[in-house]
Amino acid sequence: MRRIAATIAVAALTLTGCATGEDSGASDGTINAAVAYATTNYDPSATSSALALGTNWHVMEGLYELNMADYSVYKGLAAEDEPTKVSDTEYTVSLREGAKFSDGTDVTSADVVHSFERAMKEGNLYASMLNFIDSVEAKDERTVTIKLKKPFSLLQERLAVVKIVPKDATEEQLTSKPVGTGPYKYESIDDARIKAVKNENYNGTKPAGSDAIEWEVLIDDTARTTALQSGSVDVMENVPADNRSQLESAGMTVESKKGFNQPFLIFNTQKAPFNDKRVRQALHYAINTQQLVDNNMSGTATPASSFLPENHPNYHKAATQYEYDPEKAKKLLAEAGVDKLNITLLTTDHTWIENLSPQIKNDLEAVGIGVTLQAQASASLYADNLDQENSNYDVALAPGDPSVFGQDPALLIDWWYGNNVWTQKRSFLQESDPATYQAIRAAVDEGVTLEGDAQQQKWNEALDIIADNAVTYPLFHREMITAYNDEKVSDFAPISTTGLSFLGTKTN
Image (tube, one colour):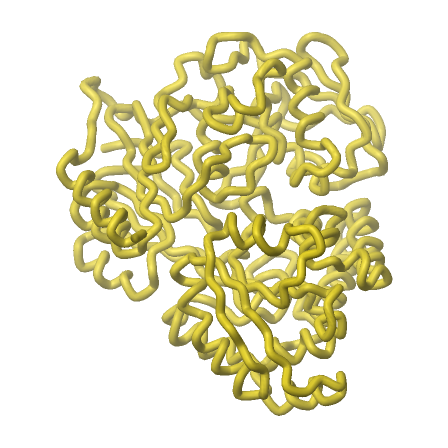
């Protein structure tokens, strides 16, 4: 069904072609992009969708923003290049002069306070990334005071997580079509296409480089490839490694960037025998990850030697290494007293994830573990299984990449090991092994107050604990491959995470 829908979408795109504006100059035309993910939630204070996050980069702003090509920080809605330090635990930030939402209303400190309160609300997915903040208060109409619970050396990077929205916006409005202060504004959003146009009220440092951007939702790999080859789109994300030469032969520029993006295994640690780390380790040793990389990823990935990828500035090779060793896997299962284990391996229906599962099944069965595969859409995987009350799932294989929010180690670790839904309901680590959970938290919570070598030592401690326990742990870190037609777009920079960033990109 997905392939049929994708083929129809490509046919429609081919007929309509690439829309262009009538004005002359560098900002003419529409950037057309083929994206690999879908969503119905664009709420900038709550979404974790790869699609929504990627489109929101162009429409929403935080006080500070990240250049997704290199993770450098620049001022968004803030007037100053850095927050003004009052003390180790107190800062002020002023809004840029004349900042308005795309509907023409002025941005005030009340909007900033409201946006932070929404994001920090207990139970919200973003709360664990902001738990170092004690309060955000309006100092005056254009300035906010940010008070911290403790010194925090990564403040500016984390402020980029919160996008500023109007204080009166409803949840339904934010979910379906949010209003922001970025260089573009949403014109239309539906299941197949998202369109943003130039925001005439924008007065920041990253003006729109085109009249509009259209993102075509083409989940099927072949559909996206065909769309780029036919000229229906100018840029394509998530290029299958096997399609690279095909696109290059068609005259497209194809670039790979190493990053954090990964397939991970997550275990239900409140359920025997997955509450025994030896069993979790056994599954990782049983999987021939290098073969997955060679055969399924065409070599465009690196087997995980740490929770962080090898090109990360804070990389540390973990003390526990899961090199392929089926005999060690059998030994660990025997030591744990496990015999004739049968599991249901849940997976998402992303093409590249589904393609991994047959070999994983064969590898696990080779060490005596019976495997039933069950693939489903991401939303169903979580809503119908992992997030169910008294969830009874065994193991899940899914893609993940919180580096869309930034790449500091604490943020990446907190995504899966913070005080949030992942440790409370999905892995159940807080309840099943509070000592391990607290050890990770202690290392990370101290690390964010430090700098330099002392900070790195704390990151290393946390990374070793995470690898040894393998509660939620990557099989490999993949390269993100992006293709584009450089005759249609200029000043485009591929990124190492999901999504496409067109800030500064122009149509030719």
